[in-house]
Length: 223
Image (cartoon, rainbow, N blue to C red; front, side, top):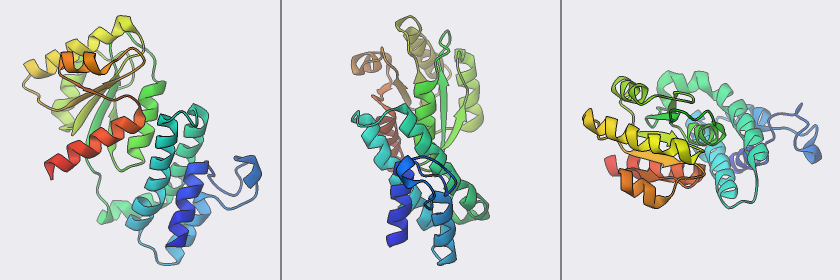
């Protein structure tokens, strides 16, 4: 359907609504807000708007980010555009037409207060139907264990930007396994490597798009 493609393109371009001045060449033109309302008026089901309009736009943007074609500011603008559509759909989705794909626990490990990478992962996976339990930064290992017991997530995501804090990931994985938690752990951040992930029994997520792909694989394996 043409309007769903238009919504996807507007998300990818970060065009929130007609009042938004971003991107400059689209000033005054309809954005995600208007097009989602138009799609609903045409009788398009909220689930289709989410799955065939909003989500593909955010996924396409995630791939561009992973390939280095765009940078953090573009991702943030796209997330605002995505949220503009989600806010319109939210009351309808709560009626039971669409269910969350599951919960993912995210946190930056103890000693590290950097959260840009974690927040980008959060934006992308939320835009693709996942519920996120965001523990924030400088998260001690016991909080991860407690959160997992409380939320029963599909996966746990750990972030670190420093080599000095990266080793906390090993401690978290160890604490989870000692507690009998076998939930997959996905790790990422500037100093993290695939080899290190294998060494500590985790899965390496090179970037936000890779994290999303990993979640898709985990979800598919359970179905």
